[in-house]
Image (cartoon, rainbow, N blue to C red; front, side, top):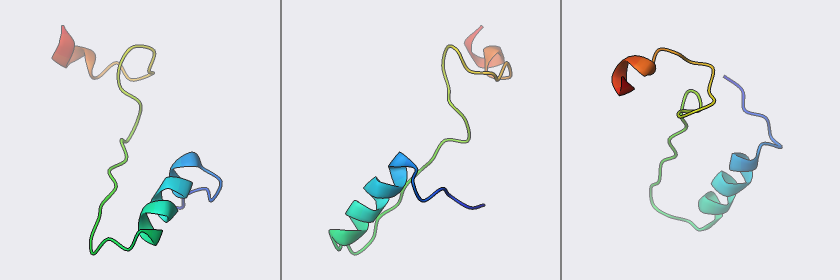
Length: 47
């Protein structure tokens, strides 16, 4: 899926790319976790 070029994490990823590491990875969560999110499926793990 496409990523907005003005999203904050894109600038960080471009900065890391400019550092010329031989390899690196970025992990993006599918959705926000913790209190206040709109996913009730994680309540099963924390009850």
